[in-house]
Structures are given as structure tokens and as C-alpha cells.
Length: 624
Image 1: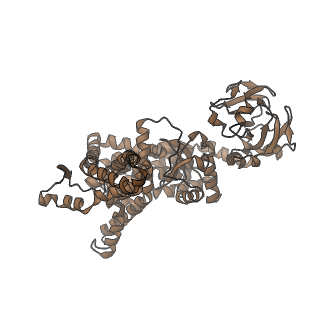
Image 2: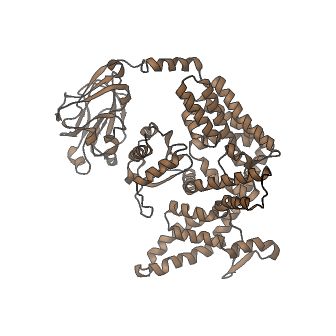
């Protein structure tokens, strides 16, 4: 599947372009904020070729791609257009405060990650060259590389101003103006000279402005842009339309700049300092236990997409203390996942799976762990557990030698030099312990060899040996006009990404059982029902399009999940007339386990009544 084809499938399965509120990406995953999360087909997304997994976390739909994420992001960006400035009616979702905070932090930091990682890599290169005495730090080449490495870290308020403005839906240029106020020479030079001059404040109408260096800070600008988003619209609404151009920005800046320099900036600056101090205290007080706890759970945070919520803490630690102890857990977790995938690859016999495991392991050694986690370790389960245990042990080991990261960069082989300890030898020993232990445990205990070898052998000759051979007829559940799925005005069904089948434009509002079997699922909104025949054919009957928005109105379901049904039994009554006033009533009939069948044949008739055969399915074994 090409990048463009995958992008089309992703857009279709998140509910289409009109369902996307905001869209961004991080190092390995696409992150969607959707207007209506119920329109997303998460299970279908998980099974797309090129997608490692999909999940809803902290109010975001995350589609994990891996190393190709930027190419897929660009492909999706080319086919959709999102108006960031418009007010959208997002379906409210109940989220606790912690989830909201995590979503906000991730939403602000995610757009900066590509530059953040790029600059971090230059810092790693400079550190490698100077530590090996290949060039002097004063050499012009090293000076320029150091400048590139410092670009985002020194001017962080500007970068975060843009992403925070998009997150909080406020004017980006006003947000940049707030960042400029923090970085203005009067403030920055005054902070730098405070120790010599003794001048630590600047008076504004009798109120003190603290001379604080806001370089590399993250909390002050995020806090300021958030407050900006709260007051901007209120001020804009108070000013007459013919005066808005002249006075809205002027009044907002007159309020916000003194407010941020007198109140918000110092609060954010001190808060960042206290956070860094708390992290140091946490490690000093908790010792190796605290390090092991974070090292062991780091991969779980990555799975949930919450690891980027630690980014401001890690960056703040580096800005305040020179190193981040938090990033050590990322280092041990990455190498543990790489080692576990390597051990699994050595243990399994299937050539294609072995190749996948080795490739994923190599990617993890260079800092991208999702292919190893989702494609290998979680698939076999035990290797993932062994990776967490190994990371915990290695992180605890490194805590004894005061390990830390000197810059924010993806932990991997290229960036090892950016880590420091009592001796760099301990960093080497730590990653060898993490990856080596995970590799050995996964090789010896991670894969049940006899079972896997038997399964691999059977897959080559009898991939569905546990499936009963059969040919089955599916009878019309609804009377009406028959059309192909390709004619359904909904790309999710028309593309057959949910499965093959047929569609009916109903003549009456009744749904009957298309075979003898059981009810596997009744949607809470009553607009769709899942059925399984006695032979195992799985059918989804989706009454109308977008009818989920009715929230069950005009539907009356007579069965529930687990009920046994007989062909022709009445399952659902629906008010055809009322529903058709607002929504298309075209009803797709989908075979959701399509891959089980060698052939799915549609009826040639243009119209069907109760008792007519509309589909005929033939299992792969029968066809062979």
C-alpha cells in the first residue's frame, strides 16, 4: 500500500475530513482530535497495512505508524484542510483533569518534536566530537553546529508560542509577541547582569517586574498563551467592529505583557525550578527504587502516548540542573525493547517474522521503539514484560552512578554520548544490561517454540484448519432495493475496508434475521447490530448512514447480545420515514470476517424481499 493509499484509508476511518478538529504528529504516531470520536473505526485502523496500532488516549485518536510517520502525515495533510481558526462543535467527551492536562501538554509539544529531536541530534554530534578531542570547542565548525543544536532550546518560548496558540485556538502572532516580551534584551540582559549590578527588578507603575532569564523555559509561555486565549475574545467582543483593527491587539498586549512579566512568567519560572528540584529530590529520596519504577513503566507510558507529557519536565531539568535523570528511563526502556525484539527474532523460526523482528530491533536501537513494541514484543506478550523488567533493573543500576542526559534527544546508539555518569563506562554497562538481559530472557522464555513451530508449519498448509468448511447463503434482512457497496455514499463502506457485502435501500422499517445464529453485538445507539451464523459468518447490519447521531431515537431493538436467533425473526423496528428526513437510509450488510472466505458473491437482483438470498459466502477451504 502506498503512502497516499494509506493516508486515504486513515482519513476515511477517522470519520472523514469533516470529523477532524486538529491533526498533528510526533516521532512515531499521528494524533487526531476528532469532533465525534464514535465515528472513528479504531479496529479497522489497527489492521491497516502500514499501521502498527491505533488507540484512543487522553482524548486523542493516536495512529501509530513508526518511522514513516512524517511521510504519512504529509500525505494526509495534502488531502485534508482544517481551519484552525474556526470554532467547531466538538462532541464533548468526559475526561478527568489529569487526562486533560496530559492531552494539553502533548498537543503543545508534539508539533515541536521534529525540530526538538533534530537540534538534540546536533548537540549529540558536538558532544561526541569534542569529547573525543577530534575538534576544539572554539573551532568555527563546532560553534556553528552548537548554534544549530541550541536553536530551539534557547528560543523555546517562540516555538511553544506557536504550538500553544494552535492548541488553545488563539492568534499565533499575538502569542509570538508574548514570547518576544519574555526574550526581549531588556529582560534577558538584565537577568544576565543581575549578579553584577544587584538590580533584579524593573518598575512598571510601581509594580516589580523580575529580571528572569526565560531562555529554555517552557511553563511561562504555555501559561501566558493559555491566559491570552481566555481574554482575547472577551476584549475583541467589547470593541466595536470599526475599531477592532486599531485597538484589539493594542489592548490585549497592554494587558498581557505586564501581566506575564509581573505575574505569569515568575510563577512559571519558579514552578519549573521547583519541578526540577522535586525530580532531584524524588531520585535522591527514592533512590534505585524510584529509578526502577520509572524505568519499568516507561514503555507503558509510550504505549499510552503519555511519554511526551514528560518532555517539559525533562527539558526543565536540563535547563535548571544541566542533566535530566528522567531521560535515563527512556534510554533503558528503548534498549530493553530493542533487546527483547532481537531475542524474539533469534527464537522464532518463521523467516518473514524473524526479518520483521530484526528490523524492528534495529529501529529500536536507534531510538524508534514502536515497531519493536507493537510489531514484535506485544505480539508475543512475554518479551514485552521481559523488556519492562530489564529496563527497571538497568535504570536502578544507573541510578547508583548518578546517570543523566545532558540534552533532550531520542535515546539510542547515536545519542549515547549525551548521557553522563560517574564514568561513561557505566552508561555502556547500563544499556548492555538493559538490552542483553531482555534479549536473553526473550530468547529462552519469550516464545513457546514447540507451539510456534507447529503453528508456523500448519499455517503453510492449513491456515484455517480450525475453521469449519462451508458454503452459506445470507438472506435479505430488509426488503428494498439492492445496490453494491461501491454505490454507498460513505467511503468507509464503499472502500470495503470494513469488509465485503451489499447494501439495501429499505422499503420498510424492519430488520429480520438473515440466518440461524446468535446476536454478537447491539450498538448502544441501536442503529447497528452484529450477528454470527451457526457456521461462523459474521455480519454487520448498519441501518442508515450517520444514524449514530440519533442516539437510538426512532429505533426499537427486540434482541440483545447473546440471544439465539432464527432466520426470519424480527430483530429491529425503525421509523423509516422519520429517519429518512435527516439521514440517508441506505443500509450496508457487511461480512466483517471477509478474510475467512474465498468468495463472497452478491445477488444479481435489483430488489429483494424477505427470504431472498442476497449473499453467498464460500470458505477458503471449500474453494480449494
